[in-house]
Each structure stands twice: as structure tokens, then as C-alpha cells.
Image 1 (tube, rainbow, N blue to C red):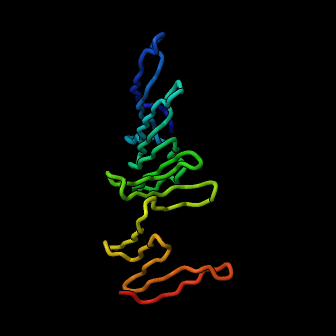
Image 2: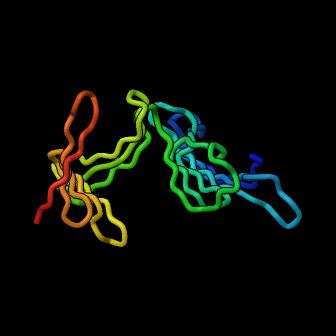
Image 3: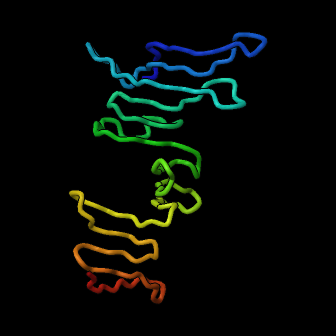
Length: 171
């Protein structure tokens, strides 16, 4: 695993020599090959500002999983053939940010070492809707209350260090 099958490199002269690589694409063996079997991955690397050589930016592994950032495909258990998007980043930077074209509504999810948590958030003053079969099941409103199912509203209250949930009907 890791042997190179091919590489395409992009570079330019830096004013002195033709030694500056801007990016490269390479194909590597992704697991032990067998007879008529060559599992491979596609690795895309770009050179960051002030750096002299490319760093992995994106990988597509043998299962078609897409890894964004400097993320090793071997960190997931091998053999998992379901599709997934894996993003690796800095300590406070592995995440997805979503927004519409005018930035009216946007939010995201990310990991955080400082809170040891996976955080899902809205950044604008809008509720979060959780749906199954395209039907709202839970709506988390921006004031901290949430709507659950068909007609129940619940409000969180701190009580002796715990969490109380009270439900009322609404129309």
C-alpha cells in the first residue's frame, strides 16, 4: 500500500530555477494488490502560501470515499464500503460550512478540541429543522425552545443542575 502508480506534477520557475511545485495529482496503491486486482486511491496535493512543496488536499480512496484536507484514509476501518465525506483539519478547523448565495441563512458543523464536542450550529438567527421523509420531526428555535412531532412544544429549563422538559400543545 502506498506505492505510486503514476504522478502528474505542475510547477513553474520562481525567477531563478524551475523548482517550485504548485500542485500534483498521483495514484497510489490503496491496499494489498491481488491477481487482476489493483485497489488504488487518487491523491490531490496543493502548495500552500509560504510553503515549498505540495501537501495533500484531497483523496479519493478505493471505495470512492472523498477525504478533504490532510486526512489519512486509513483512519477509518478498512472494508467500510458505504459512501462518506471525511474532512480533516486543524484542531478547531475540521468542519462543513453551508450558506445560501446571499448569506441570508448559514450554519455548519465542526469538531472542537477545546470543548471535546461535535458542534452543529446556525450562524444566522434562524431555526434548525430535523426531518425524516421530508417532514419536520423536531424544530429547534433560535430562543432555545423546540417543537417536537405533531403539536407538542417543549422548553428547556435548568433545575438543580439537571434538565427539565415541559410539553404543551400548540397550534
